Image (cartoon, rainbow, N blue to C red; front, side):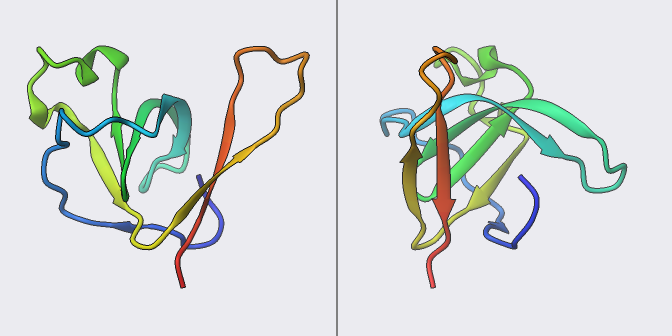
Length: 99
């Protein structure tokens, strides 16, 4: 989740629990101050990519304020990328920033 600037950090509102996620799963993100990597649970909904410390924080009984952060992706396109059939259960997607 580094490289080109493709997302802006945005003071996000809480995720809408009725909005169906496009993608969800574990990703690694680089911390902003100490540049090490940490694993976070991400949920992509519409034009926002939310991240949480744990998968349990996403469940409906969890407080909606538990998300750790959000990346706002206005006008972006989500493209699924084919994976190696030998890596069953691994899914890859690309976020293509809007112009």
